[in-house]
Length: 213
Image (cartoon, rainbow, N blue to C red; front, top):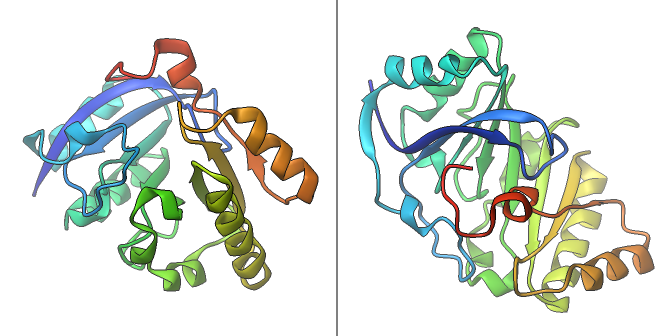
């Protein structure tokens, strides 16, 4: 069972409710979207094939009990759910960062789903699989990268609509270099939005162009 991997590294979790905690990261190659602000374009087709066992071995080498499986879009690879299950079986907490366009039903229910719903400025908002919201649990998280006030209004309505049907943690981030953080924070405060404001702290620590962090 082979996986195409862009990079495996250890770093501080820069986003989600787990922000600031040490994590191992597995970035799988391939993505079905081309968001205008994408900061990991190298994961579109860069990478090397490894057996699943080798990927697990490299992750466990770090000695960190928390793992993020990301991309690109990791769930495009048929073997990704098996990797997630293998890491969970070893006792890791596993976050799976997905763009929400691929069905989440194949994921092990023990995994924490981080669904990045694309806003209009991404150019990919129409590709979201809205049925995935029915598969979320209270410990799963939905992330929005906000580039404009239109994006914010879009995210606000999604949170209000789907949050009534299924509880989840909502996360809003200003698109790095495109939206001043204070604007997004102000909109959220003004609306008393039931969501968490977040910055990508790995970019603040190491800079926006550093790989492997």
